[in-house]
Length: 277
Image 1: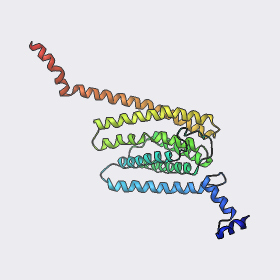
Image 2: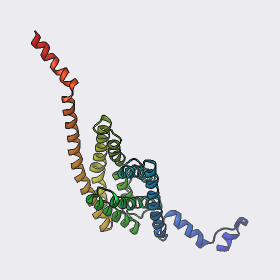
Image 3: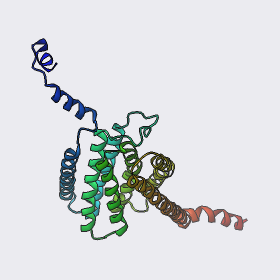
Image 4: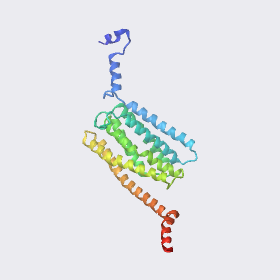
């Protein structure tokens, strides 16, 4: 059979063993081991994100370390959302294939994010303002996504989680970037705050619980289930803090409007006119 395939139509075709290998690789079958490719992609990703930061640091040399890092983080958030969207096979049910083997696209998408998280964790250690909770968050995320890459399972759930967690991050970073650019306590900064809060709330407190339920009820490894539950608990904690932040911002904005000279003038003029009569 192999000789017939090689001699048909006078073409030099691949042997059956090579055809099967190529087919396994293209279809992401379990017998194709993507481990080496994923490790190489993670290493290349760490180098790429670090290089991007160095270039941005040179371009914005007068800006702070955090400002340049947030630009890299914004790029990653946008890229992660795009890559996660490209891996979805059925938008009517993105996580219908739960607890299934990860596809090559899903593993590559997760590897890009793991590389970013490793880079960002290193940056956190060099930042002037060390944040313990941010460091723990990075470590937990790396372990969770890394477990998915090792098991080569739960790709649908993890890519969906990546989409949910990153969709609001461009506006999160925009808030801080605007502050350093001199737009603190402006309408533009308030718009970024509210946009971030709305997207975060919908993604994390609507899509998040559904994804957590799907992950916990499917036949997933216990580590993946633990990470899904932990992520939802962290999301609920940050949702509480974001609600407090928005209430504070709106109340501060209201006090600022009431104390403005124009507002006082508009309210005192009718009183003065009434007294004159």
